[in-house]
Image (cartoon, rainbow, N blue to C red; front, side, top):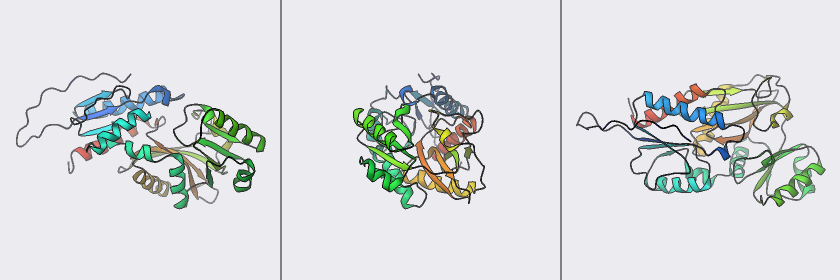
Length: 301
């Protein structure tokens, strides 16, 4: 449940003091925070506090209890992941409410759409979409590879799998079919340093970590397949430029994801996510999100 904040005091607008902007901050249902419930709650509370300290009226809302009317919101910051919530928010967005991250874009852009754009831009791993022929997959991608559901973010470890050989591939395809997962992608496994990145487009904020270092956080333990990082040299600014471009393309100014750094410094984005947990940089991310929101609400301030 999101924290409860005091209602803002009544405000009397004058010609020189327009009413303060109202921000709706929407939490994420815990079913969409596998092994990350506390981390998602922490970034939610940190953003709420950062905005409250700036004196902004704020309504903290559960994604399962959305209002029917968003006309009172000047900006909505949403961590919601359910299709029901995103559909409701998309209707409000169509009616003119500004919402980050864009629910219409999230509904429109599956993993397959994101991977397609990344490949066209030259920063993605080779992939196939909804191909269920093991021999065709092996010819195209080789082994090892990854299989991921494309229609939603992973809620269980079974939604994203590392596949070492044809026997594991056939088993994974059968499991997906049995679970009714009809929209999925298969991606080539890229060797190199695995880097998790976090950003807020439109701000200087950008952070990256090596999750396979000792004591690094892992949601499902899958990062181990990339091994310990060699810490190849690469351009962090170039990675931020690329991820910011993806954020604009997919309507996700608050974003995170995974990249593979090759020995020659080239990088490839293998995952791009809507509003991650920011576990390694919670406070800095919250301040960046609040800054971007305030610049939107008070242009030129």
